[in-house]
Image (tube, rainbow, N blue to C red; front, side, top):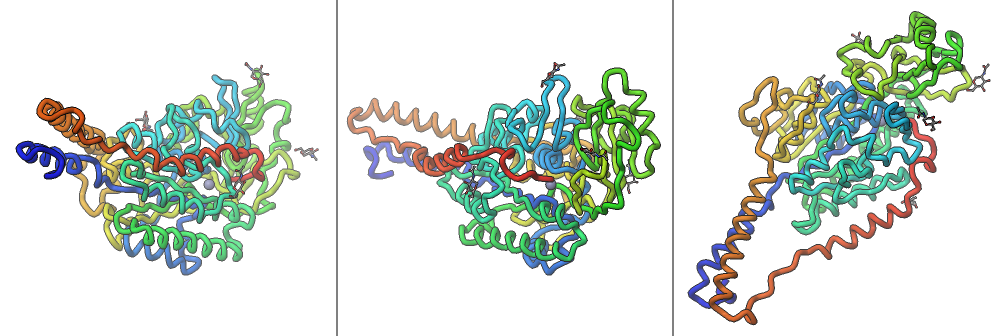
Length: 487
Ligand SMILES: *[C@@H]1O[C@H](CO)[C@@H](O)[C@H](O)[C@H]1NC(C)=O
Ligand SMILES: *[C@@H]1O[C@H](CO)[C@@H](O)[C@H](O)[C@H]1NC(C)=O
Ligand SMILES: *[C@@H]1O[C@H](CO)[C@@H](O)[C@H](O)[C@H]1NC(C)=O
Ligand SMILES: *[C@@H]1O[C@H](CO)[C@@H](O)[C@H](O)[C@H]1NC(C)=O
Ligand SMILES: *[C@@H]1O[C@H](CO)[C@@H](O)[C@H](O)[C@H]1NC(C)=O
Ligand SMILES: [Zn+2]
């Protein structure tokens, strides 16, 4: 301060200089959400899984997380970051048809990148940015799509071949970037143990090695966070989208036995199938399928059980078929067969994901019996001091996980903590007004020539990162070129 101006101005200058760091959002809580696809809640008890158990000891565990129907990858990943059921967020399946758009959505095509599929909801990374924060995303479903006109500040375009370790390194770079560039919130996705669960079946002894490897990967993440000095202050949530159940080629429902293929189009596949009967064929198709097979439930759209919260969307088809746990719905037996699958009734324990979390926001060595996966969204908003958008979860149901009770908990309506957008912005504006006021005063007092140059923003420092991201984007062959996934 002393060196910057004439002595009689020093006190004012010092006040302005001190105010800036005090009110700038430098101590925002940080949050990393990790999903290991298809990590069933009880996998941690099959092998030592020392890293999962260490997190539970350092933080919290929820034993039964009821995820959303249908228990598939895209619908559940979108619920985790929106707190909405599929019928509201609009990603109702991995494969969809939208009658208004007359378009199909498939993980195997570029349709994934069309924002119209995603824009019914606002994912947390978009809200963080709209509130003045920054976010990063490593391969999370939907995070490389321009939703509501916005990509995450930092993201990796989807490429299943990018190793977990690379994804972790990028996330750590984003968190440890210079203050103005560092992300507040990031999401990180890994394809295992889902991929192997489908191939081997969850009951296969070979799955033990796959689970142990995921635990090792979690260990890598912990080590790297420690090395970067992030471990203690970061809130880390490790969860998944769904579980997995064992299949058998004895347990097949063959639609061709009951109704001609020429009478309908099927949209999402086993174990939950959307059926569009041909024009004028609704009653015929419905009556032929109803009660056709004891291992298949058949619902008219308007009769889908209320507890599924899976009815009020254009992309939910006129007839819904649901296989009983362990059964597959096929047209005939030549269809490719998998030893493990998911998608079934979300009340089934086999469909439930893992949930562990640690960090300053969480209690230590605490186990909660249950929660809904839609509760994660208000929990994350609370941690980030962000006002949640309307959602289907409840902060009240998960408040016991927190090290500090949230203010004024109300059972039905989750409290709305003040958005962190305003305090820092107003604070910064006050500082700016003071600095500008001071400068005007200063300019009047001394000659313009002697004005100190204002420090420039550190935008340049983000360029190497940004360019790498863009480079990856150009290299990307979309999901269609990657081998067929059954997530
Ligand atoms: C829907 O799109 C297909 C081409 O993908 C076209 O053949 C069909 O006529 C369209 N249907 C309507 C109702 O516009
Ligand atoms: C089974 O379905 C396949 C196509 O999915 C078809 O090529 C084949 O002819 C069918 N087999 C029988 C016995 O109907
Ligand atoms: C789903 O599973 C639960 C628990 O097994 C069961 O009570 C329920 O009837 C099943 N089906 C539906 C449609 O909820
Ligand atoms: C879920 O939340 C959305 C947004 O508030 C609301 O429109 C919808 O009705 C809710 N669904 C249920 C089943 O309460
Ligand atoms: C996907 O990632 C792998 C491994 O980093 C890389 O070799 C490959 O070129 C990438 N593919 C695309 C299309 O970017
Ligand atoms: Zn999945």
